[in-house]
Amino acid sequence: MDSLEEAYRNTNYTVNVESKKFTINIDCENLEWSEFLKLKKQTFYFYITAWNPFSEVTSPKKNEEANIKLKERLLSLDLLVYDGVGYSLDMKWHEDSFCALGGNRELAYGLGKEFKQNAIVIGSIGEVPALLYTNK
Image (cartoon, rainbow, N blue to C red; front, side, top):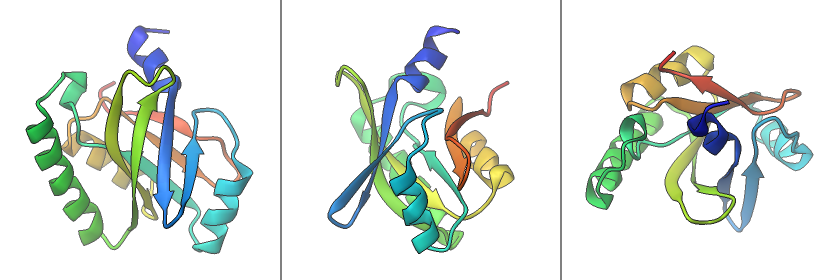
């Protein structure tokens, strides 16, 4: 496993929903999250950011501007969009992100490519969250 994949796998992907915070981890089932998806009548979700395109550190201002464009794009697709933060287990690194409910794998893949992300997190009810690489 390369260091970038290891970093993705060792990240907590948080989703802020009103006063509740969910944490998604690669290959780990989260029954509470699945129940939330059922409540929202959604089966597919993806977790994405526009920060640090192609994993190259970018200025905070450029990251914020890119994330604003990403959120506008997600909302224009009539997805349910929640703010989140992906952060490393040692808390030394984080990226503001979004969790979108709805859509499908192809849409998520296309948005990952459009916003120059090496990988995004995808999941469905009954499946553990997984990485979807957009650069391989």
